[in-house]
Image 1 (cartoon, rainbow, N blue to C red):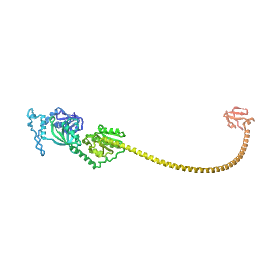
Image 2 (cartoon, rainbow, N blue to C red):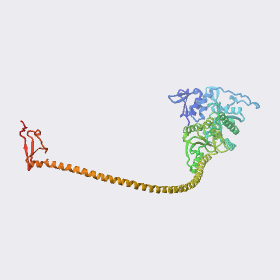
Image 3 (tube, one colour):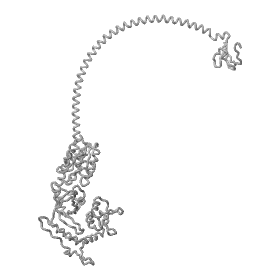
Image 4 (tube, rainbow, N blue to C red):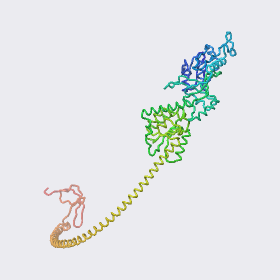
Length: 554
Protein backbone atom coordinates (compact mmCIF):
# COMPACT_ATOMS: atom_id res chain seq x y z
CA UNK A 1 0.00 0.00 0.00
CA UNK A 2 1.37 3.41 -1.04
CA UNK A 3 -0.92 5.62 1.08
CA UNK A 4 -4.49 6.20 2.22
CA UNK A 5 -7.37 8.52 1.30
CA UNK A 6 -10.01 9.19 4.00
CA UNK A 7 -13.01 11.46 4.42
CA UNK A 8 -12.59 14.17 7.04
CA UNK A 9 -15.04 14.32 9.96
CA UNK A 10 -16.59 17.47 8.49
CA UNK A 11 -17.37 15.55 5.28
CA UNK A 12 -16.04 18.46 3.22
CA UNK A 13 -12.46 17.36 2.69
CA UNK A 14 -10.47 14.30 1.72
CA UNK A 15 -7.36 13.54 3.84
CA UNK A 16 -4.40 12.09 1.91
CA UNK A 17 -1.60 10.39 3.89
CA UNK A 18 1.56 8.71 2.59
CA UNK A 19 5.28 8.44 3.43
CA UNK A 20 7.25 11.15 1.70
CA UNK A 21 8.01 10.38 -1.92
CA UNK A 22 8.90 13.02 -4.45
CA UNK A 23 6.75 11.62 -7.27
CA UNK A 24 3.71 11.32 -4.98
CA UNK A 25 4.12 14.89 -3.77
CA UNK A 26 4.24 16.04 -7.39
CA UNK A 27 1.08 14.05 -8.15
CA UNK A 28 -0.83 15.51 -5.18
CA UNK A 29 0.23 19.04 -6.12
CA UNK A 30 -1.62 18.54 -9.41
CA UNK A 31 -4.95 18.15 -7.55
CA UNK A 32 -7.22 21.22 -7.48
CA UNK A 33 -7.66 22.91 -4.09
CA UNK A 34 -4.98 20.76 -2.38
CA UNK A 35 -3.54 22.19 0.87
CA UNK A 36 -0.89 20.85 3.27
CA UNK A 37 -2.01 20.59 6.92
CA UNK A 38 1.25 20.76 8.97
CA UNK A 39 -0.50 19.94 12.28
CA UNK A 40 -2.04 16.66 11.13
CA UNK A 41 0.67 16.13 8.49
CA UNK A 42 -1.88 15.35 5.76
CA UNK A 43 -2.89 16.82 2.45
CA UNK A 44 -6.43 18.25 2.34
CA UNK A 45 -8.46 18.30 -0.89
CA UNK A 46 -12.10 19.47 -1.16
CA UNK A 47 -14.45 16.49 -1.39
CA UNK A 48 -15.97 18.01 -4.51
CA UNK A 49 -12.78 16.92 -6.31
CA UNK A 50 -13.08 13.27 -5.25
CA UNK A 51 -13.15 12.10 -8.86
CA UNK A 52 -9.78 13.75 -9.67
CA UNK A 53 -8.28 12.38 -6.42
CA UNK A 54 -9.44 8.88 -7.27
CA UNK A 55 -8.20 9.13 -10.87
CA UNK A 56 -4.75 10.40 -9.91
CA UNK A 57 -4.06 8.29 -6.81
CA UNK A 58 -5.62 4.98 -7.78
CA UNK A 59 -2.84 4.34 -10.28
CA UNK A 60 -0.35 4.78 -7.42
CA UNK A 61 -2.15 1.99 -5.48
CA UNK A 62 -3.57 4.22 -2.72
CA UNK A 63 -6.12 2.60 -0.37
CA UNK A 64 -9.44 4.46 -0.30
CA UNK A 65 -11.75 4.51 2.74
CA UNK A 66 -15.13 2.72 2.28
CA UNK A 67 -17.05 5.99 2.09
CA UNK A 68 -15.01 7.27 -0.87
CA UNK A 69 -16.80 5.13 -3.59
CA UNK A 70 -20.22 6.39 -2.47
CA UNK A 71 -18.86 9.91 -2.53
CA UNK A 72 -17.65 9.32 -6.07
CA UNK A 73 -21.08 8.04 -7.09
CA UNK A 74 -22.76 11.10 -5.64
CA UNK A 75 -20.30 13.38 -7.41
CA UNK A 76 -20.86 11.71 -10.74
CA UNK A 77 -24.66 11.74 -10.37
CA UNK A 78 -24.61 15.42 -9.58
CA UNK A 79 -22.90 16.16 -12.91
CA UNK A 80 -25.08 16.55 -16.02
CA UNK A 81 -24.46 13.91 -18.63
CA UNK A 82 -23.11 15.52 -21.79
CA UNK A 83 -23.12 13.79 -25.09
CA UNK A 84 -19.85 14.42 -26.90
CA UNK A 85 -20.13 15.23 -30.56
CA UNK A 86 -16.62 14.98 -31.97
CA UNK A 87 -15.88 15.99 -35.50
CA UNK A 88 -15.15 13.19 -37.92
CA UNK A 89 -11.59 13.03 -39.12
CA UNK A 90 -10.98 13.84 -42.76
CA UNK A 91 -11.62 10.86 -44.98
CA UNK A 92 -13.56 8.89 -42.33
CA UNK A 93 -17.22 8.28 -41.78
CA UNK A 94 -18.95 10.11 -38.90
CA UNK A 95 -18.85 8.11 -35.70
CA UNK A 96 -22.15 7.20 -33.99
CA UNK A 97 -23.13 9.22 -30.94
CA UNK A 98 -23.24 7.65 -27.48
CA UNK A 99 -26.35 5.86 -26.33
CA UNK A 100 -28.90 8.23 -24.71
CA UNK A 101 -29.29 7.93 -20.95
CA UNK A 102 -32.93 6.93 -21.25
CA UNK A 103 -32.05 3.85 -23.27
CA UNK A 104 -29.91 2.42 -20.50
CA UNK A 105 -32.89 0.85 -18.78
CA UNK A 106 -30.99 -2.17 -17.35
CA UNK A 107 -28.72 0.13 -15.37
CA UNK A 108 -31.41 2.38 -13.95
CA UNK A 109 -32.21 2.28 -10.27
CA UNK A 110 -35.02 3.91 -8.31
CA UNK A 111 -33.98 7.08 -6.56
CA UNK A 112 -36.23 6.78 -3.52
CA UNK A 113 -38.68 9.61 -3.11
CA UNK A 114 -37.92 10.98 -6.58
CA UNK A 115 -39.56 9.21 -9.53
CA UNK A 116 -36.64 10.15 -11.82
CA UNK A 117 -34.39 7.17 -12.52
CA UNK A 118 -30.71 7.19 -11.31
CA UNK A 119 -27.75 5.28 -12.66
CA UNK A 120 -25.80 2.73 -10.67
CA UNK A 121 -22.05 3.35 -10.77
CA UNK A 122 -21.35 0.20 -12.76
CA UNK A 123 -24.02 1.17 -15.30
CA UNK A 124 -22.59 4.66 -15.61
CA UNK A 125 -19.09 3.31 -16.18
CA UNK A 126 -20.42 0.82 -18.73
CA UNK A 127 -22.20 3.63 -20.59
CA UNK A 128 -19.03 5.76 -20.64
CA UNK A 129 -16.96 2.80 -21.82
CA UNK A 130 -19.44 2.05 -24.62
CA UNK A 131 -19.52 5.71 -25.56
CA UNK A 132 -15.72 5.85 -25.79
CA UNK A 133 -15.62 2.71 -27.90
CA UNK A 134 -18.20 4.22 -30.24
CA UNK A 135 -16.21 7.47 -30.50
CA UNK A 136 -12.98 5.54 -31.25
CA UNK A 137 -14.09 2.32 -32.96
CA UNK A 138 -10.66 1.73 -34.56
CA UNK A 139 -7.12 1.65 -33.23
CA UNK A 140 -5.01 4.81 -33.73
CA UNK A 141 -1.43 5.95 -33.17
CA UNK A 142 -0.40 8.01 -30.12
CA UNK A 143 3.01 9.61 -29.41
CA UNK A 144 4.27 10.25 -25.88
CA UNK A 145 7.05 9.66 -23.32
CA UNK A 146 6.89 6.49 -21.22
CA UNK A 147 6.52 7.01 -17.43
CA UNK A 148 6.36 4.34 -14.66
CA UNK A 149 6.94 1.46 -17.08
CA UNK A 150 9.91 0.20 -15.04
CA UNK A 151 7.78 -0.09 -11.89
CA UNK A 152 5.73 -2.90 -13.44
CA UNK A 153 8.76 -4.95 -14.49
CA UNK A 154 8.23 -8.67 -14.02
CA UNK A 155 4.43 -8.40 -13.93
CA UNK A 156 2.14 -10.18 -16.34
CA UNK A 157 0.27 -7.00 -17.31
CA UNK A 158 2.22 -3.73 -17.62
CA UNK A 159 0.48 -0.49 -16.58
CA UNK A 160 2.18 2.87 -17.13
CA UNK A 161 1.59 6.36 -18.55
CA UNK A 162 2.30 8.26 -21.70
CA UNK A 163 2.98 11.95 -21.10
CA UNK A 164 3.40 14.99 -23.28
CA UNK A 165 6.10 17.50 -22.28
CA UNK A 166 6.96 20.93 -23.57
CA UNK A 167 10.55 21.38 -24.74
CA UNK A 168 12.82 21.96 -21.76
CA UNK A 169 10.06 21.45 -19.20
CA UNK A 170 10.02 18.62 -16.64
CA UNK A 171 6.33 18.83 -15.77
CA UNK A 172 4.04 17.10 -18.29
CA UNK A 173 1.43 19.05 -20.17
CA UNK A 174 -0.85 16.01 -20.32
CA UNK A 175 -0.83 12.33 -19.39
CA UNK A 176 -2.86 9.24 -20.22
CA UNK A 177 -3.02 5.84 -18.51
CA UNK A 178 -1.71 2.95 -20.63
CA UNK A 179 -2.22 -0.80 -20.36
CA UNK A 180 -0.02 -3.39 -22.04
CA UNK A 181 -1.76 -6.68 -21.39
CA UNK A 182 0.11 -9.97 -21.24
CA UNK A 183 -1.09 -11.21 -24.62
CA UNK A 184 0.27 -8.12 -26.39
CA UNK A 185 3.40 -7.95 -24.21
CA UNK A 186 4.36 -11.56 -25.01
CA UNK A 187 4.12 -10.72 -28.70
CA UNK A 188 5.55 -7.18 -28.82
CA UNK A 189 8.43 -7.12 -26.33
CA UNK A 190 10.41 -10.07 -27.79
CA UNK A 191 9.79 -8.73 -31.31
CA UNK A 192 11.19 -5.33 -30.30
CA UNK A 193 14.26 -6.98 -28.78
CA UNK A 194 14.83 -8.90 -32.04
CA UNK A 195 14.55 -5.70 -34.05
CA UNK A 196 17.74 -4.45 -35.74
CA UNK A 197 18.83 -2.47 -33.84
CA UNK A 198 17.03 -3.88 -30.81
CA UNK A 199 14.59 -1.79 -28.79
CA UNK A 200 13.73 -2.29 -25.10
CA UNK A 201 10.90 -0.22 -23.66
CA UNK A 202 11.80 1.79 -20.57
CA UNK A 203 10.96 5.03 -18.78
CA UNK A 204 11.98 8.19 -20.59
CA UNK A 205 11.62 6.84 -24.12
CA UNK A 206 9.42 8.69 -26.57
CA UNK A 207 7.36 6.09 -28.42
CA UNK A 208 4.71 5.84 -31.11
CA UNK A 209 2.14 3.20 -30.17
CA UNK A 210 -0.98 1.83 -31.80
CA UNK A 211 -3.78 1.86 -29.19
CA UNK A 212 -7.48 1.51 -28.68
CA UNK A 213 -9.62 3.35 -26.10
CA UNK A 214 -10.94 1.48 -23.08
CA UNK A 215 -12.41 2.16 -19.65
CA UNK A 216 -12.19 -0.17 -16.65
CA UNK A 217 -15.77 -0.27 -15.43
CA UNK A 218 -14.91 -1.34 -11.88
CA UNK A 219 -13.03 1.88 -11.19
CA UNK A 220 -14.17 4.15 -13.99
CA UNK A 221 -10.54 4.61 -15.05
CA UNK A 222 -10.04 5.66 -18.65
CA UNK A 223 -6.99 4.18 -20.38
CA UNK A 224 -5.53 3.25 -23.74
CA UNK A 225 -4.55 -0.33 -24.54
CA UNK A 226 -1.38 -0.93 -26.56
CA UNK A 227 -1.66 -3.13 -29.63
CA UNK A 228 1.58 -2.32 -31.47
CA UNK A 229 4.78 -0.23 -31.19
CA UNK A 230 6.65 1.56 -33.98
CA UNK A 231 10.38 0.90 -33.20
CA UNK A 232 11.69 3.05 -36.06
CA UNK A 233 10.09 6.16 -34.50
CA UNK A 234 11.85 5.72 -31.14
CA UNK A 235 15.19 4.71 -32.64
CA UNK A 236 14.99 7.66 -35.01
CA UNK A 237 14.34 10.00 -32.09
CA UNK A 238 17.33 8.59 -30.23
CA UNK A 239 19.55 9.00 -33.27
CA UNK A 240 18.33 12.58 -33.74
CA UNK A 241 19.10 13.41 -30.10
CA UNK A 242 22.56 11.91 -30.48
CA UNK A 243 23.27 13.94 -33.61
CA UNK A 244 22.05 17.16 -31.96
CA UNK A 245 24.42 16.63 -29.00
CA UNK A 246 27.38 15.88 -31.28
CA UNK A 247 26.60 18.93 -33.42
CA UNK A 248 26.55 21.19 -30.34
CA UNK A 249 29.88 19.76 -29.10
CA UNK A 250 31.43 20.31 -32.52
CA UNK A 251 30.23 23.93 -32.57
CA UNK A 252 31.89 24.48 -29.16
CA UNK A 253 35.10 22.80 -30.29
CA UNK A 254 34.71 19.99 -27.75
CA UNK A 255 33.90 17.00 -29.96
CA UNK A 256 37.51 15.74 -30.08
CA UNK A 257 38.95 17.42 -26.97
CA UNK A 258 39.03 14.35 -24.72
CA UNK A 259 39.89 12.00 -27.58
CA UNK A 260 43.04 14.05 -28.25
CA UNK A 261 44.32 13.70 -24.69
CA UNK A 262 47.28 11.33 -24.70
CA UNK A 263 47.48 8.09 -22.75
CA UNK A 264 49.96 8.16 -19.85
CA UNK A 265 52.68 5.56 -20.43
CA UNK A 266 51.81 3.38 -18.75
CA UNK A 267 48.34 4.15 -17.36
CA UNK A 268 48.37 2.36 -13.98
CA UNK A 269 46.12 4.46 -11.72
CA UNK A 270 42.67 3.62 -13.07
CA UNK A 271 39.33 5.14 -12.05
CA UNK A 272 36.18 3.21 -12.96
CA UNK A 273 32.57 4.43 -13.14
CA UNK A 274 30.12 1.51 -13.20
CA UNK A 275 27.74 -0.53 -11.09
CA UNK A 276 29.46 -2.97 -8.71
CA UNK A 277 26.66 -5.45 -9.50
CA UNK A 278 27.06 -5.27 -13.27
CA UNK A 279 28.49 -8.16 -15.27
CA UNK A 280 30.66 -5.68 -17.12
CA UNK A 281 32.43 -4.69 -13.90
CA UNK A 282 33.04 -8.33 -12.98
CA UNK A 283 34.47 -9.04 -16.45
CA UNK A 284 36.68 -5.94 -16.27
CA UNK A 285 37.97 -6.71 -12.77
CA UNK A 286 38.57 -10.40 -13.48
CA UNK A 287 40.64 -9.63 -16.57
CA UNK A 288 42.72 -7.03 -14.70
CA UNK A 289 43.37 -9.38 -11.78
CA UNK A 290 44.29 -12.31 -14.03
CA UNK A 291 46.75 -10.16 -15.99
CA UNK A 292 48.70 -9.25 -12.79
CA UNK A 293 50.36 -6.19 -14.29
CA UNK A 294 50.04 -3.99 -11.21
CA UNK A 295 47.02 -1.85 -12.15
CA UNK A 296 45.65 0.22 -9.24
CA UNK A 297 41.84 0.29 -9.78
CA UNK A 298 39.44 2.61 -7.89
CA UNK A 299 35.68 2.03 -8.33
CA UNK A 300 33.16 4.88 -8.03
CA UNK A 301 29.77 3.06 -7.98
CA UNK A 302 26.97 4.42 -10.17
CA UNK A 303 23.78 3.16 -11.80
CA UNK A 304 24.38 2.21 -15.43
CA UNK A 305 20.81 2.74 -16.61
CA UNK A 306 17.66 4.50 -15.51
CA UNK A 307 17.02 8.02 -14.27
CA UNK A 308 19.69 7.76 -11.56
CA UNK A 309 22.45 7.24 -14.15
CA UNK A 310 22.89 10.91 -15.06
CA UNK A 311 23.24 12.47 -11.57
CA UNK A 312 25.44 9.62 -10.33
CA UNK A 313 27.63 9.65 -13.44
CA UNK A 314 28.07 13.43 -13.26
CA UNK A 315 28.94 13.20 -9.54
CA UNK A 316 31.52 10.50 -10.31
CA UNK A 317 33.11 12.56 -13.09
CA UNK A 318 33.35 15.55 -10.74
CA UNK A 319 34.92 13.35 -8.04
CA UNK A 320 37.67 12.12 -10.37
CA UNK A 321 38.20 15.61 -11.83
CA UNK A 322 38.84 16.97 -8.32
CA UNK A 323 41.52 14.26 -7.89
CA UNK A 324 42.99 14.39 -11.39
CA UNK A 325 46.57 14.26 -10.08
CA UNK A 326 45.84 10.89 -8.41
CA UNK A 327 44.65 9.06 -11.56
CA UNK A 328 45.86 8.39 -15.09
CA UNK A 329 42.57 7.53 -16.86
CA UNK A 330 38.87 7.14 -16.03
CA UNK A 331 36.86 4.23 -17.49
CA UNK A 332 33.08 4.21 -17.95
CA UNK A 333 31.97 0.60 -18.42
CA UNK A 334 28.83 -1.52 -18.47
CA UNK A 335 27.75 -4.76 -20.12
CA UNK A 336 26.04 -4.90 -23.46
CA UNK A 337 22.42 -3.88 -23.81
CA UNK A 338 19.86 -2.65 -26.25
CA UNK A 339 20.19 0.65 -28.06
CA UNK A 340 17.59 2.16 -25.76
CA UNK A 341 19.51 1.02 -22.67
CA UNK A 342 22.62 2.78 -23.95
CA UNK A 343 20.54 5.89 -24.76
CA UNK A 344 20.81 6.89 -21.10
CA UNK A 345 24.40 7.89 -21.96
CA UNK A 346 23.18 10.14 -24.80
CA UNK A 347 22.75 13.14 -22.51
CA UNK A 348 23.97 16.66 -23.20
CA UNK A 349 25.25 17.36 -19.66
CA UNK A 350 27.05 14.00 -19.48
CA UNK A 351 28.61 14.58 -22.90
CA UNK A 352 29.86 18.05 -21.90
CA UNK A 353 31.32 16.68 -18.65
CA UNK A 354 33.18 13.92 -20.52
CA UNK A 355 34.39 16.22 -23.30
CA UNK A 356 35.84 18.74 -20.81
CA UNK A 357 37.19 16.24 -18.28
CA UNK A 358 40.87 16.75 -17.37
CA UNK A 359 41.57 13.00 -17.47
CA UNK A 360 41.53 10.69 -20.46
CA UNK A 361 38.14 8.93 -20.62
CA UNK A 362 37.85 5.36 -21.90
CA UNK A 363 34.37 3.99 -22.59
CA UNK A 364 33.19 0.42 -22.90
CA UNK A 365 29.41 0.58 -22.58
CA UNK A 366 28.14 -1.68 -25.33
CA UNK A 367 28.95 -3.92 -28.24
CA UNK A 368 30.45 -2.73 -31.48
CA UNK A 369 27.12 -2.19 -33.19
CA UNK A 370 25.85 -0.01 -30.32
CA UNK A 371 27.33 3.50 -30.39
CA UNK A 372 26.50 6.27 -27.92
CA UNK A 373 27.55 9.92 -27.81
CA UNK A 374 30.33 8.99 -25.41
CA UNK A 375 31.74 6.50 -27.94
CA UNK A 376 32.07 9.40 -30.40
CA UNK A 377 33.80 11.90 -28.06
CA UNK A 378 36.05 9.63 -25.94
CA UNK A 379 38.30 6.65 -26.55
CA UNK A 380 35.87 3.80 -27.21
CA UNK A 381 36.24 0.05 -26.81
CA UNK A 382 33.60 -2.56 -27.59
CA UNK A 383 33.17 -4.05 -24.11
CA UNK A 384 34.44 -3.68 -20.51
CA UNK A 385 36.74 -6.63 -21.17
CA UNK A 386 38.16 -4.80 -24.19
CA UNK A 387 38.81 -1.77 -21.96
CA UNK A 388 40.64 -3.97 -19.47
CA UNK A 389 42.65 -5.54 -22.31
CA UNK A 390 43.59 -2.06 -23.55
CA UNK A 391 44.89 -1.05 -20.11
CA UNK A 392 46.69 -4.35 -19.56
CA UNK A 393 48.20 -4.19 -23.06
CA UNK A 394 49.41 -0.65 -22.37
CA UNK A 395 51.29 -1.77 -19.26
CA UNK A 396 52.65 -4.85 -21.03
CA UNK A 397 53.80 -2.81 -24.02
CA UNK A 398 55.40 -0.23 -21.72
CA UNK A 399 57.12 -3.02 -19.83
CA UNK A 400 58.29 -4.64 -23.10
CA UNK A 401 59.54 -1.24 -24.29
CA UNK A 402 61.50 -0.78 -21.06
CA UNK A 403 62.97 -4.29 -21.36
CA UNK A 404 63.87 -3.67 -25.01
CA UNK A 405 65.47 -0.35 -24.17
CA UNK A 406 67.35 -1.97 -21.31
CA UNK A 407 68.67 -4.67 -23.64
CA UNK A 408 69.73 -2.10 -26.24
CA UNK A 409 71.31 0.03 -23.52
CA UNK A 410 73.13 -3.02 -22.14
CA UNK A 411 74.44 -3.88 -25.61
CA UNK A 412 75.52 -0.28 -26.22
CA UNK A 413 77.26 -0.14 -22.84
CA UNK A 414 79.00 -3.48 -23.48
CA UNK A 415 80.23 -2.23 -26.89
CA UNK A 416 81.36 1.07 -25.38
CA UNK A 417 83.15 -0.72 -22.55
CA UNK A 418 84.93 -2.98 -25.07
CA UNK A 419 86.09 -0.01 -27.12
CA UNK A 420 87.19 1.85 -23.99
CA UNK A 421 88.92 -1.27 -22.66
CA UNK A 422 90.91 -1.59 -25.90
CA UNK A 423 91.72 2.11 -25.90
CA UNK A 424 92.78 1.88 -22.25
CA UNK A 425 95.01 -1.13 -22.97
CA UNK A 426 96.70 0.78 -25.82
CA UNK A 427 97.10 3.79 -23.58
CA UNK A 428 98.49 1.61 -20.79
CA UNK A 429 101.11 0.15 -23.11
CA UNK A 430 102.13 3.62 -24.19
CA UNK A 431 102.29 4.80 -20.61
CA UNK A 432 104.38 1.74 -19.69
CA UNK A 433 106.91 2.40 -22.47
CA UNK A 434 107.11 6.09 -21.66
CA UNK A 435 107.39 5.38 -17.95
CA UNK A 436 110.15 2.80 -18.48
CA UNK A 437 112.12 5.25 -20.62
CA UNK A 438 111.54 8.05 -18.16
CA UNK A 439 112.58 5.88 -15.24
CA UNK A 440 115.77 4.86 -17.05
CA UNK A 441 116.60 8.49 -17.75
CA UNK A 442 115.79 9.42 -14.17
CA UNK A 443 117.90 6.52 -12.86
CA UNK A 444 120.93 7.70 -14.90
CA UNK A 445 120.37 11.23 -13.72
CA UNK A 446 120.11 10.09 -10.13
CA UNK A 447 123.33 8.10 -10.43
CA UNK A 448 125.22 11.13 -11.72
CA UNK A 449 123.61 13.34 -9.12
CA UNK A 450 124.47 10.79 -6.40
CA UNK A 451 128.16 10.75 -7.45
CA UNK A 452 128.33 14.55 -7.42
CA UNK A 453 126.51 14.75 -4.09
CA UNK A 454 128.84 12.17 -2.54
CA UNK A 455 131.97 14.10 -3.64
CA UNK A 456 130.49 17.37 -2.47
CA UNK A 457 129.44 15.78 0.81
CA UNK A 458 132.96 14.39 1.42
CA UNK A 459 134.52 17.80 0.74
CA UNK A 460 131.99 19.51 2.97
CA UNK A 461 132.54 16.96 5.73
CA UNK A 462 136.28 17.43 5.57
CA UNK A 463 135.93 21.18 5.92
CA UNK A 464 133.41 20.78 8.72
CA UNK A 465 135.69 18.29 10.52
CA UNK A 466 138.60 20.70 10.40
CA UNK A 467 136.46 23.48 11.80
CA UNK A 468 135.18 21.17 14.55
CA UNK A 469 138.74 20.24 15.54
CA UNK A 470 139.65 23.93 15.74
CA UNK A 471 136.57 24.71 17.81
CA UNK A 472 137.26 21.73 20.09
CA UNK A 473 140.82 22.90 20.77
CA UNK A 474 139.64 26.44 21.54
CA UNK A 475 136.83 25.13 23.69
CA UNK A 476 139.23 22.92 25.65
CA UNK A 477 141.51 25.87 26.49
CA UNK A 478 138.56 28.05 27.49
CA UNK A 479 137.08 25.27 29.64
CA UNK A 480 140.37 24.75 31.51
CA UNK A 481 140.65 28.46 32.26
CA UNK A 482 137.03 28.57 33.44
CA UNK A 483 137.53 25.52 35.69
CA UNK A 484 140.65 27.16 37.25
CA UNK A 485 138.76 30.37 37.99
CA UNK A 486 135.80 28.57 39.56
CA UNK A 487 138.13 26.28 41.57
CA UNK A 488 139.72 29.37 43.13
CA UNK A 489 136.33 30.84 43.93
CA UNK A 490 135.23 27.58 45.54
CA UNK A 491 138.37 27.51 47.68
CA UNK A 492 137.62 31.04 48.87
CA UNK A 493 134.03 30.09 49.65
CA UNK A 494 135.18 27.03 51.58
CA UNK A 495 137.51 29.14 53.61
CA UNK A 496 134.75 31.59 54.46
CA UNK A 497 132.41 28.78 55.30
CA UNK A 498 134.90 27.32 57.73
CA UNK A 499 135.39 30.65 59.34
CA UNK A 500 131.63 31.28 59.63
CA UNK A 501 130.69 27.76 60.76
CA UNK A 502 128.45 28.16 63.92
CA UNK A 503 130.07 25.10 65.42
CA UNK A 504 133.42 26.74 65.39
CA UNK A 505 131.83 29.87 66.89
CA UNK A 506 130.14 27.87 69.63
CA UNK A 507 133.42 26.08 70.32
CA UNK A 508 134.94 29.41 71.24
CA UNK A 509 132.24 29.94 73.92
CA UNK A 510 129.52 31.78 72.01
CA UNK A 511 125.74 30.85 72.05
CA UNK A 512 122.86 31.00 69.52
CA UNK A 513 119.43 32.19 70.62
CA UNK A 514 116.33 30.91 68.73
CA UNK A 515 112.62 31.57 69.15
CA UNK A 516 110.01 28.85 69.74
CA UNK A 517 109.83 28.23 65.96
CA UNK A 518 113.55 27.63 65.68
CA UNK A 519 114.44 30.92 63.98
CA UNK A 520 117.69 32.64 65.00
CA UNK A 521 117.25 35.86 67.04
CA UNK A 522 120.22 38.02 66.00
CA UNK A 523 119.33 40.94 68.29
CA UNK A 524 117.34 41.96 71.35
CA UNK A 525 114.94 43.94 69.21
CA UNK A 526 113.16 40.73 68.25
CA UNK A 527 112.57 39.64 71.86
CA UNK A 528 109.37 40.19 73.75
CA UNK A 529 108.61 39.85 77.45
CA UNK A 530 107.37 36.42 78.51
CA UNK A 531 108.60 34.96 75.17
CA UNK A 532 109.85 31.40 75.19
CA UNK A 533 113.37 31.07 73.70
CA UNK A 534 115.99 28.35 73.21
CA UNK A 535 119.71 29.01 73.90
CA UNK A 536 122.17 26.71 72.08
CA UNK A 537 125.74 25.99 73.24
CA UNK A 538 128.43 23.84 71.69
CA UNK A 539 127.45 20.87 73.75
CA UNK A 540 123.67 21.34 74.15
CA UNK A 541 120.75 23.79 74.55
CA UNK A 542 118.41 25.20 77.23
CA UNK A 543 114.85 26.53 77.06
CA UNK A 544 114.43 29.94 78.76
CA UNK A 545 111.74 32.48 79.55
CA UNK A 546 112.28 36.19 78.98
CA UNK A 547 111.49 38.10 82.18
CA UNK A 548 113.18 41.41 81.47
CA UNK A 549 114.68 43.01 78.40
CA UNK A 550 117.55 45.43 78.73
CA UNK A 551 118.95 47.23 75.70
CA UNK A 552 122.43 48.68 75.67
CA UNK A 553 122.53 52.16 77.11
CA UNK A 554 119.44 51.73 79.23
